[in-house]
Image 1 (cartoon, rainbow, N blue to C red):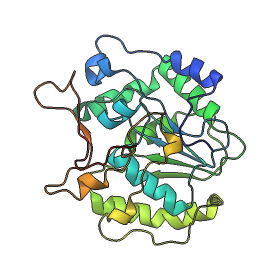
Image 2: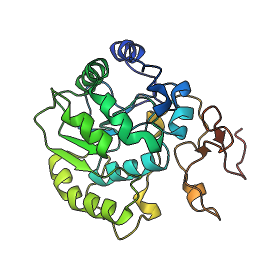
Image 3: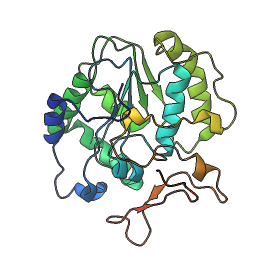
Image 4: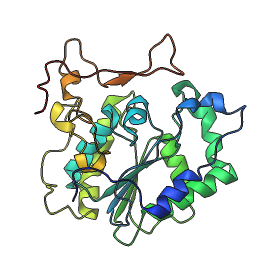
Length: 263
């Protein structure tokens, strides 16, 4: 496998290009001017696990792939515990980032015919006969899953979003579901599904760095691994954030200090 993601196959690229937008009255529900972010992982039908989350965040916008920030690194840790190193596809209920305070208002848009048709076609295109499980992280993902007419006949798991505020409930439900998911999904040859599950709080070992094969060519080597921020004093969980002065049109991207230049 190459050590970077070359981008979507032609059929998926055409489908991504055809993503419908939102009416002007609905655009304020989203960080609309930043545009959509679509996926991470395998799009060629080889995914054994499909995960659906809610929407992309600021780190995802900079990287151009979904689930790469703190929440994504928790999901990658979850996939690692399942024994998957590459055989997964990750998408969102919404291709545009949703203002957190508007999430429940935006949910009705999942049922709008144009968006419903586009999203269900996406889910059909990224799944194939290798699929063994579907995981929906959070309420938006679970709503989108419930609207998918072609959901495959595989085990389906509805779990809290990785950034859910009730961490104790999140960990309990992830911990409870993991043995069943492990029994449903065949590990990758270089994966291990026999390790520990989750304790009472997230440990650094519960995170995993985003594989380079999931990321576009040319990104700094530290992208997708925010361990340095989580271990900083004071800690911060993402390398990208929206500043309070202009959250709609400005992103701040912070690199770790003390890096050795290549070469």
